[in-house]
Image (cartoon, rainbow, N blue to C red; front, side, top):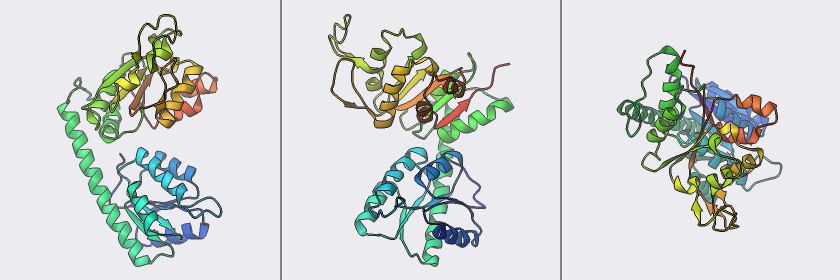
Length: 328
């Protein structure tokens, strides 16, 4: 969840045509808005991950000669995962009732067909900014109330100035569904923060399952993560359900994530990308719905640079990073 200054709305504009981006920029800045423009789906997602916006105006087509809107519909799903409270207004020159309905189903708040009418576009943007800011205020207040009540978790006590950014991140991102990487030295409270994030989320009524990846031996770690079927290996006397299924609808906390082997990193990445997994010894694919929280006292960027940790896996785990300061 993002929080922005309501006095000056920040609008993200995503379109592959420079003249469209410039026209929208001039129109919105003329109304007192701040704008940022991007020209590609990758640029759009990067901007949302690294900035705060009150609304997004986005085209549905980016590749040359495409008119189906499929690129934009796929983007809408990813945007919902990054910031479900961000009001998205989709734009296309190839509008249709069916496409508009599908865009709204994927999370868009409104639909504007090109060429647009300035008066209507500004009215839609103004309305969506107000609604989005109201939703963020409501989510923030609810998150702060949950944090104060300490529902279903150890009491998180933190008064020092260096912990205030951590508390702000918990209040903002706890209610969301994004994956969170928690970093910090041994003993700084990474598991307490993970339990807090779980309790504050919409998944708080479901299970939170903790797996200490660093404490698993190489021979059993895959089975311990994904479960196995009887006969999968010598000691597999019965079927075993793994933590992904045990945490269905809830949260899976992977502690000491830096210690996971390269081979298992690839399998974990596949689950995070597709939401699908198999038991060891089985070819039956299973859908899983879990929020992933992970923790480490290592610097994963250094691990990536050393070739011991996958960059794409780090990207999937690290939608939001919460770094805990040392106790000293």
